[in-house]
Image (cartoon, rainbow, N blue to C red; front, side, top):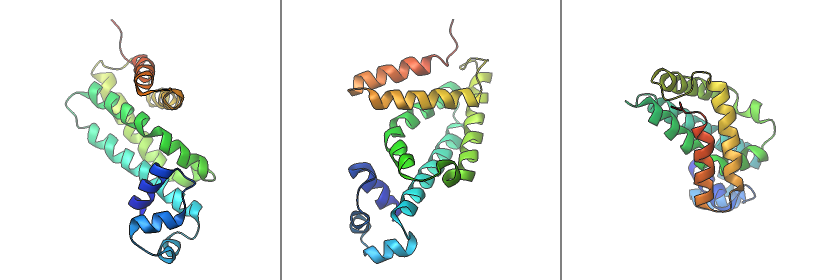
Length: 167
C-alpha cells in the first residue's frame, strides 16, 4: 500500500486522493483507512518510508570502493528525489517529529559517507556531515527552481563541486 501511495503521490502530487491510492494498491478505500486513519497519516508513512530508503541507500554506498563517488552519487540521488520529498514534507505536520528516529539514522549514515570521502581526499577537510546536509538542502531547493533538466544538472553540479577538494 505504501508503494502504491508513493507512486500516486509522485505522479499526481500530495493532493491526490486516497481513493487513487486504494485503486493503485488494488484494495478498497476501507482497507487504506484501516491502516492509515487519515490522509496525513498515509503521507507521514510514505515520508518515513522514503527516509528509510535513503538510509539504506547511504549505508550501501558506504561500502563502495571509491568513497568520493559514493558520497557524490548519494547526494545526486537525494537531489533527484527532493521535489517529491519536499512536497510530502510540506503536507505533514511537524516533520521533525514525524521522521524522528529515521532522521537520526540518516544523519549517521551520511556521517559515515562524509568521513570516508574526507579521508580519501575527495571532500574538503573543513566540511562535516552537518555542512554537507545544509548544502544538500540548498541544492535540492535550487534544483526545484531550474526551468529545465540541463539547468538543474548544471546548478546541482556547481553547488556540489563546492564540497570537493580543489587543486
